[in-house]
Length: 274
DNA sequence: GGCTTTGTTTTATA
DNA sequence: GTATAAAACAAAGC
Image (cartoon, rainbow, N blue to C red; front, side, top):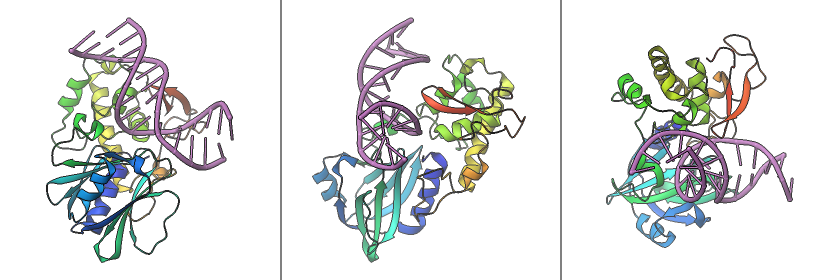
């Protein structure tokens, strides 16, 4: 599942592979993935645009184009953005092909077809779903412990659901939420405002550390995730609790539990996550 | 063919 | 209006 570290890895790859390239033509094989504007307009406006830079905001990929437009991509569960030579054959899950100059393709590949692309005017993110309502970037220097602590105050929801809420904090999904709560030794069922000062600090540090480790490992390829070159990440080898239900806790040796919390499969150690 | 998967949006409830 | 929880939705693999 592409979360912040996976999206960051993809963005870095795209920057080195296709920055400065021009979109010469598009092939849209599944129109349902084009969320905005209507497909005909999407196709016409993109032709001839140059990719000036590639950025990330939360789990959204932003391709800044010439002419004041931004192509926004969200990969949801199983989406991939791949850079491939034009002659590489499509498979059944290749849905949008951006044909670039010099014989390169940028391809949107998605087994589940849950991913979406949006073409917006620079800075006007309203048509792009939750992009305009994202919370702070957890790795940005401006996001301080004080901010985090203040934001948690008075929140009665459990900490797991709050961390998954993109308008509260951007970029965390099920994998890194479970890993950060484990690293901070905090139970996912705790209400947010029940956390003591030292626990808030441990969680703040854990969120940032886990995300940085994820990026350093090139993301988590538990199943579908691949980077822009089609390569797997390695963070699955470092997972402490996610998908480790029934295994021994690496910290205390108890058996890791998997349970549905906040509507999501949640992995945690019932003994040492308090 | 029902169940599962996750990120996001929508709806319901307090 | 706000905070929160629950349900719905996307589509395909098994």
